[in-house]
Image 1 (spheres, rainbow, N blue to C red):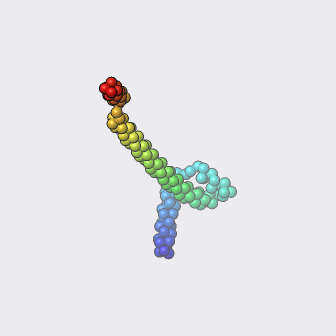
Image 2: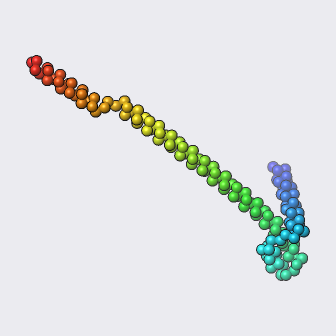
Image 3: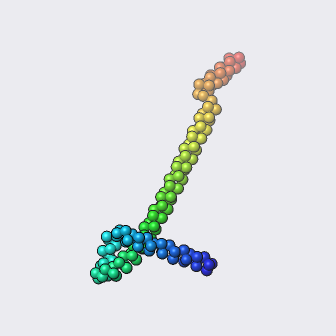
Length: 136
């Protein structure tokens, strides 16, 4: 267990080092986030050297925050996609069940004796009863 914690901590330190390197490369390339630079200047009481140090720390945290937000957005999108797929599947299942019920009802209707046939049967029975009564 402690080995996993140590490995995780080591990986975190290496990642953080690469983030600091990225910020230094940005600064050497003349790239600065104006909002972070303003915050760093304000927090350093105008000291350029202190502001640069704070800016680096703030920018590293900013990169970490961007990565977290990107991950959260990706997870939310994946969750929304999974929910949409589940909803589509549920709709498809409901439609299939509705079609099956409609088919079963249609088949049941086809098996029913139509009204005209009942009328004919009743007429035949009535004629039989009349014939029997006449013969008595």
